[in-house]
Length: 404
Figure 1 (tube, rainbow, N blue to C red):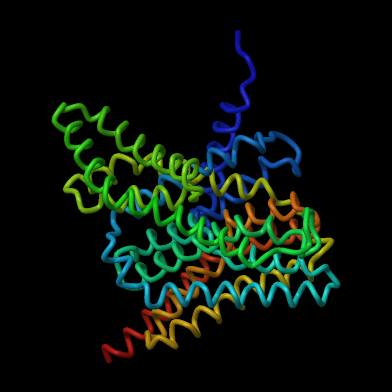
Figure 2 (cartoon, rainbow, N blue to C red; figure 1 turned 135 degrees about the vertical axis):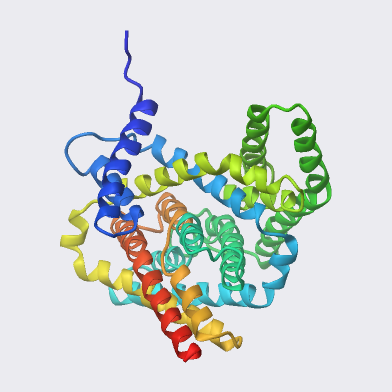
């Protein structure tokens, strides 16, 4: 007897719709991820017909984020991360501040409370891990200087968002949300910041001292068994286990945990084989990420709140891009590099949804502003491949000028 399984139905329905609409997008010479997002809209609760489970799909998508960041870490060393800190650290913080101010400014024009505007601006400030990495991979930019800057920038953004998620409940009362106290001592805030940064530092130190030795040693022992199946299982267990452990024990995001797991393995001779073994699952689950994002969009928002959606989209695509472009140029990098970084960061994703959800739970955000964030995320993800196409054409024109 067959029993209905939400998990199986969600996986099968999501992948089938993604395959059909992704193929259609490819035939129309559009990026396949546009088809994946449309598949999510089709499988979402706001359109008739098949509806995927809205609780299961995001959890499956999180696995895609973990495996993708693990794969990036496999090709990214500690030396690479330190080499771009001078531009990635101030750049990411500067862009977060700019986007937050722009979002807060828009909220004040719309008459929103201060707390809602702050959370709204913060949600618009952080780029999607999956979208950025997919774009870099498709353009073979991961190992270039531009790609390393973008990835370092992304790591800093993730660290800032981890700190934000910890601090937001503390300031909720002051910002007009659900808070037990309206007065917060400076020592309490400082202690929270120190504790959060201390946990992150402890995790990084553990990975660099212990993980750097144990993970390669363990995989080498598995290689000696001659079992490809066990090696593949060991790689997946390492990526998922470290990511989950980092979140559970150190309050570090899944993405950062997986990234450092891959990075400590990068110096091992087995790193390339590990990347190859995890690639198929990485691709499959990253597709589920885009489907899960598409499921969140209620198309009626685009019609009933057109100008507000447009303003949100302009902050993400234009405001953030110009900020990133200006910061990169300020550090003496070429216009082509500045455009690549700007295009990479001109979208929002996972942390934006998490932050908006926390804002609602704390009484700082309304469903209306939450829907604007979702619409802005999906539209910016749809536009992002087109920005890269335009950037690539600019690079080609510049190269032709230099050649002539």
